Length: 404
Ligand SMILES: Cc1ncc(COP(=O)(O)O)c(C=O)c1O
Image (cartoon, rainbow, N blue to C red; front, side, top):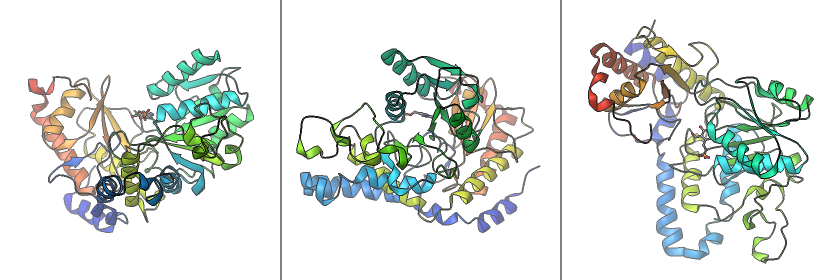
């Protein structure tokens, strides 16, 4: 059962987030369902990069570290992210990549005396790869726990779990409060990977007892390709936290050039080397598109868009690798088909951009900021035409590209 185009337009008229769309200028006719791999640029991101390059860098040059407060940019960017994930403004810093930030937090927890690192099997691979490396470096055990087992599945002697708040394949949303309770009961800690959750799910991390998190800036936060990631650390724990990538940008007074590391207060100590200012400026600007956006409304709209899509294509013979319509699910849906890659390519050729995740998943992200119900209905109609007409069988759609 799906809705008519007129009903979709009525939903768009009543959408409390329609105002956010004016920040985006997507190519005419394109329906962009790939915000969970690379969000499009909001106008504010483009304007911010222009000002950064043409005025701050080109004219003000080195003075910009002070006059444009480049030094403060990682924490100012973190403050904007903090509101979206529900933590105190001063408890987030933008820095490095998710992979590097996982290392900082997990290794810091080893420094604090916890033992063993683990990840759920099937979670995003880099999380496990980094922990394997940390295990080799430190000698602490590395373990996989079963998918969905969470903190309760940690083997004896393993106390650090890295877990996605939203799974990159299934879009399942973790029960953060319950996981934190389970972790605390066994003296363990969870590092939340918010890559597919930040900017989409009403996370309310602090209220749910989360203590450590990382997330990426280039997906739903629309910070641009390779945008900096971020770190959250509970402010009550940050001052005692010792992360081992103790570079000068995490030092209390970097411009003293003193021998000996002294960490900056709070989350600022998660800085390491010189921040990528142009890239971070883009992320900082992009986050303005979230001004006034209520995260509960954003989450509800993303789910409603996904539900609409799933209902509109439910008779096309796809398998389902995500929670179904009406069930708790974050911002994307995952369908399965053995020719999923070719089908995604055929959709891209028709102006509907999704992505393919090996071995057989067609993944479509539903950003609540720039997608309308009418867009999603049209995307579903195009998928139906591709399946009915079997146009995906054209040989050009089978050729695999490096990035899927
Ligand atoms: C859940 C998750 N974690 C981590 C990453 C990769 O993070 P980075 O490349 O910033 O290290 C991704 C990338 O798609 C992801 O989806």
